Amino acid sequence: MDMLGRLLIKVTVTLAIASVAAVPVRAEFRAGPLTFSAFGTLGGVWSSNNQADYTIGIQPSGPGRSYDFDLGMDSRLGGQLDLGLSESTTLTAQAVVDRNARNQFVPRLTLGHVRQQFLDYFTVRAGRMQNPMFLAAEYRLANFSNPWVRTPNVVYDLYPLVYYDGADLSFRYGTPLGQLTLRSGYGWFDFEVPVQGRHRYFLGKGQSRNLYFLSTQLEQGPWRVKAGWIQGQIDYHDPLMDQGMGYLGMFDGAAARRLLLRDKSGSLVSLGAAYDGADWLVMGEWVYAFSNGGLTNRHGGYLTVGYHWERFMPQLTIGYVSSLAPDTRSANPIAQGILDEMYRGSNQDQSLLALGLNYYVNDSVAVRGQVDLIQPHRNSNGPYTMNQTSKYRIDRPDLECLVSVSVDFVY
Image (tube, rainbow, N blue to C red):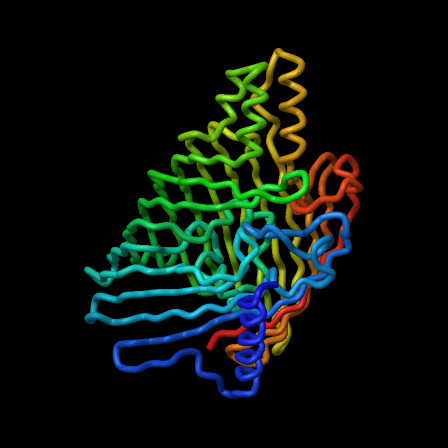
């Protein structure tokens, strides 16, 4: 872990201890039109799989082969500034330090937009904003408001990028069924993702342009229902893909052109519902991600059930990821062999059972523990796509255990 990463851990520990000691805790600081708030997570993770790393999002390493006990996967520190320029205009900036695709702890701007309230029910924003597709979209990085140690990878890793640049508009108004919010926007973003090579990982680089999205959310008391659709043009390449597609193109040029992600359209549909009452928490989401290029289309979902018992909340989560049958085939046996190997290497199908226990120290600090039982499907990597040894059995992967502890806070 680099120097900035060690500093992040120290700062996060200090703020977490200070938050626990300060009762009651102030969740934000105000000075005239300026508001500052901070959030963070200190987490540690152990994996029973020592032949590969358990990874999330765009991180290239994790617990397993690289770390016996990883303090960097879930740990992050963030701060947000809101400046009221007028009664109807607000400027927001948020920065987060966490592990990126280059395995470094480097600050990144996760929010940076101006918000204009034209009417009580009509708002326009422009700049950098967070992906609006999921139930936990607004709290994906500030994990205190979520019921898990981390958002379930079976849904959230199907779209691991958390923000985009562009503009959106939202309408919010009351209906007989509850408060309805409609949001639509246009944007773009650049991204990097790690790709495992034979002896080291490479960085794949991509762009998403002409990104359109539409989401709707209905809230009534403890109930919340959300649906979303997003579509964009994707252009992506990495050294291994370029080499593999070049080799495939020698035997079947049409198959290579179809799989190559050069200005291809991709879409994602999401559905979610949550009930958070005085006693019970029940929430679930389902997503379907597909494109007219690339290797496979996937869908995944989870269901979480929790029970509020004083300051404790035990919870259980079940989930899955499944890929559709490949729609690119080749009459050339050599090309089909290459395709089969590509599909096999990209398969991340899995089943998940997670048991967690949350303890809310006060209104700003939560201590969590969670045990995940993960079963990659046959001929699937599951979440173990990085830093595999030659002994890892993708043909018959074992049931693996992931143990996580964390402290989440807002300040």
